[in-house]
Length: 162
Length: 162
Image (cartoon, rainbow over all chains, first blue to last red; front, side):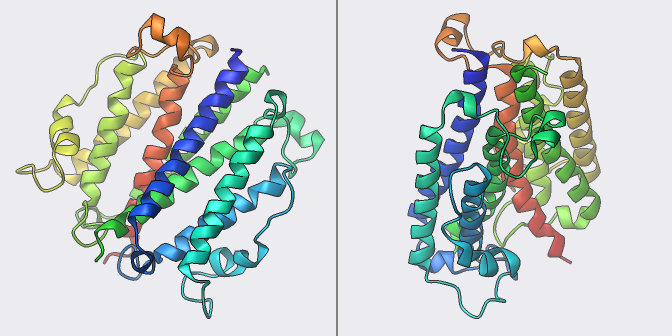
């Protein structure tokens, strides 16, 4: 295995660990728990999950994998803070959207050849990429890892909520 | 820049972003806030910060950078759940321990030559490393990133606590 392949595997494995951790957590949390706040006055579980869906789906065009399939979720789950949207979609719909988002990403990852990962993502010009070669497709995945973990740390707090 | 160097920079930059995020958060949180629970009945800020210190310091021997400088923190911040230790060290001491841990790691990182990062860490045999070449020094840093972010997501909740 080349160093390049090892580096790609490291990042993809770390991403998949995070995804599996969230999948497991979601089987442990009821819809009622996802409607609760992670801490008094803070975001609700459903808001955080919808937020994760949006941030994963908007990496799709960034990596050249096609359109964001859920542009209607950007407003209620990213542009607006929790409780500003008149109504959020039902929990079941957001669970389903997460499942679709993570599955689509996994399928896209599996189809990406080794020599694609260190090529530029779509939001940087070829000129700038010469100077900042870390702004590649693998880095898009890498930077999703801390974002995912940040929110998993918060969603974990819902486990104790009756 | 070689692909190997780009991959190393990507991981180190992501690690440093997390460290800087925690450093900034710590300037925003008072000692009183760090003594509060992140959510009713859950861990206190000081416990989480001490836990991060231990997990960072125990990566030091794993990467061949010397001994863990704070073995006395393992018991109260990792082996025991929060509130089981009779008394935790003062907040100022744990803040200081974090500062030392992250600075020591940064210094060690800066001294590590490019061709060291994809060599094995100290807890895997040369034989196993042949089969699992991702268990290298760079991966030790990579796997600390989601752990750090998980707990930053929780510590952030202390900001609203008066």
